[in-house]
Length: 161
Image 1 (spheres, helix red, strand yellow):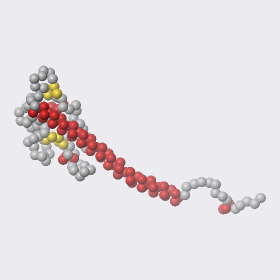
Image 2 (cartoon, one colour):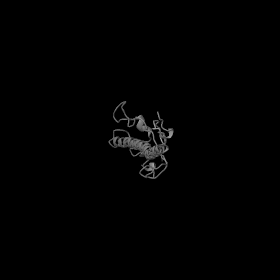
Image 3 (cartoon, rainbow, N blue to C red):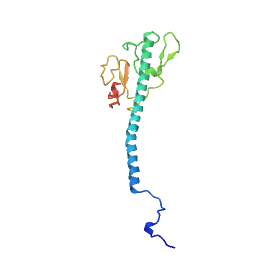
Image 4 (cartoon, one colour):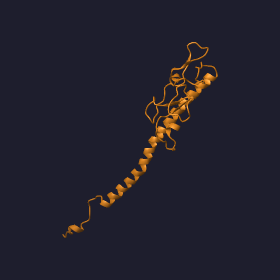
């Protein structure tokens, strides 16, 4: 029986060549480079959505407080123009006019500013403050903004939302 030389034996062992490994590594690198920006911006987009929701919630509560005061359903403090004198007034509730032991609350809790990570660092503005003021005058609560110095995906700073 004749045997073939070892160099010409049919190849039965399977393996991965270096070229195949390089191609697979290149494909994985391309997929990773495409998915990283998507993941990075999705986290920021989620935080921005939470910020919009928190701002809307507090601003709606301030507007509802103003509607109640304009309708004469709650007492109006002097110098507040019918707006709450402080943010906590929306949480604690206000006595209704003509009702005994009846309060109306406008917020359950102050939402967390996701850009700062705290619910105590909101920038509060009153009707007497300048529109671009960076501190609260203390007269009333007319508006609320984020105190973050960051810029949104739309190019507008969070403090101007």
